[in-house]
Length: 342
Image 1: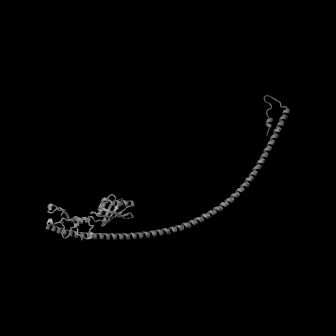
Image 2: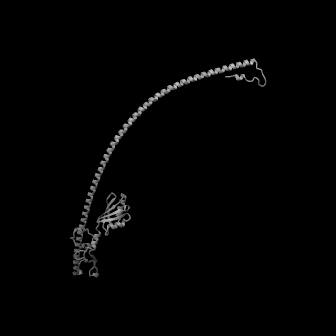
Image 3: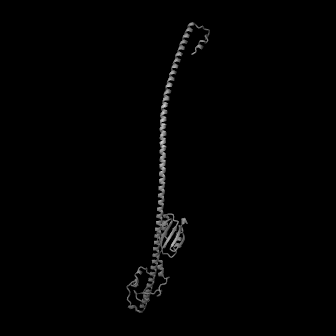
């Protein structure tokens, strides 16, 4: 440190003063001590600097060695990672190739199974259609046979009924002649009821035929010239040639005859609608029976037993106007369209 400024300072302070030699010597000694102290401090600082530089060099050397070790380990790990990556890429490529092969095999097998299933479905559908067509043909033939038998039975019953009516008319005339020729006192009152006048030799097939008003049974009173308990059978207006087709007998037989009809609804979207239509058909007047025949591809077929005098198509058109539209009636088949699809 430079101490010359202290020596060159103004010796006069607060007045003129003279510096003695003793003070100069003490000042010189102080300066020397101070200089030696500064030198010692500078040496110590230089030693500390050298030591710090040495420590820094050592530390730098250690860092370089550690860095080299880390770089070597990093290179080894990087090489291992690269090798592992290459192995994984190769494995992924192999897996992709295997998956592609399996996918092609699966697609081929799936296409074969789909084609086989379609073929089986087509065969089953064709077989089902053939069976349904056969069943329909058998049912149609059976229905026609039953209708023919029913018509033949009806004609036979009508013929037998006309014969019975003719015989009853003959019996009425004979009984009337007998009553006119025989005195009333000699006639014993008959015990038999009205239905006992039916001949014993009537065909057994006519037993179930409902009784019709062919004859009128009138009680015999004193006004008729006979005693109580004797009855008279009045002659009917039928002649020996048979019964007029417009007579009450034919009317009753025709009214009691019911025929089978097929009612076809198109555009029926669900079985719920089909069930509702079946219920509504069964509630139509003069329809004795309604049963489901077939419901397929939005077409509902119902078999009904109808014995009314009006046309079935007109009757259904009136009662089902809110839900169905009449298309046409072909003999014993009535075709309608469901209102939602009309």
